[in-house]
Image 1 (cartoon, helix red, strand yellow):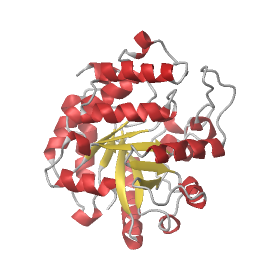
Image 2 (tube, one colour):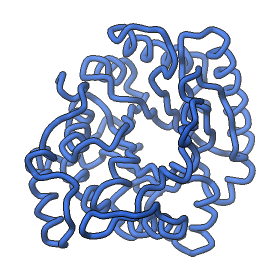
Image 3 (cartoon, rainbow, N blue to C red):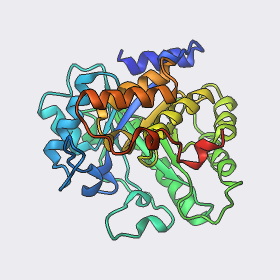
Length: 327
């Protein structure tokens, strides 16, 4: 059993401790935004003149694999294939997963406007081609309070589940907040919670996701969902890069209000030191550090490594994401 399996087993058995909190690195930006989302090639002094190449991106993934702190490494199928060819995906205690679908709301290419229209389901990766490399996929769905669009998305979700079961693939379910819906800010978190429970209610245990990946919509919404069904493991997605305090505060609040998984992409990928960011995320998750202490320790680590921070300590220790200020 990998570390992820052991942690999920303890969570489902009701034996969760903060040491069982699951951290995933979402290294799958090539499946949505594309080349620019791979991130800049950052020099130690903070300057950058270009984006990272694919090889440099793979090397950054390999460094995190070697660090062995995250529990899940999520990539595109094409990059997981390359990691296998390079020999870095074998023998690790980290669970590898692939983005199993790429809905239109994540097609955030430079100059594109796809994400402004109701999400449409789409799958580039073939489950049958992924199985030689992993048996875990991320499936994404977005509800927009649009009958035709949501019905179409649910039908595609059904097709994916049948395909996954036929090939022995498990999945975790990402549910984004509406990307093009006319719905009030007050109703939106409740709408998303109701949509999640409704779309899972008709599924037997073998069809259900291993866990959820959702936006953090505040303490009340997270607690409502996490406490409704103890068998449903809830995880939060990272959203934008934000400040370092935003990253640690999200981990802290999510765990406090019932999340058992954090799946962060840009908050890790765009950090001055992804390895130090992950190390400090783990410290916050386990309770070894509170968010303010973690920001201070992170900046000390940057100084020790002669890495110029993107912000001053004072600016980086500020909560900027509105939902985190409401707790």
